[in-house]
Image 1: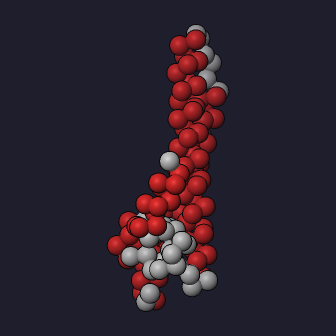
Image 2: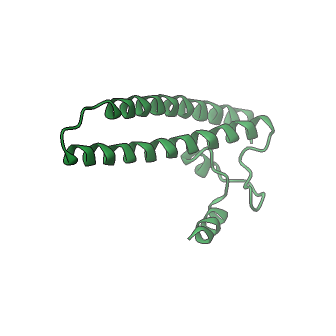
Image 3: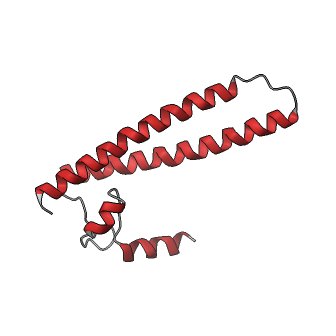
Length: 117
């Protein structure tokens, strides 16, 4: 992969990393606000509980993506970026443009997803 392509992906990953950190901070603030509400009845409690569960699930997904981004940035430093962790072939540039922190090429991703089901 050319240096200009690597720089493009570093920028893309760092931009997404900043956005995720902002999202996580916002989620934490929302959860704090929800937890501080004075609830009047079971309906209010159920509504807040539902909202809490949704916010927590979103936060966990964002934290997972943040970890994957950190791994991808490390791979760029180690000159391993864009290589499938399963077959060790190059991951297509088109796939990396959609998901720059991809661990697997398209074929191996399908295998992993089938194994997880």
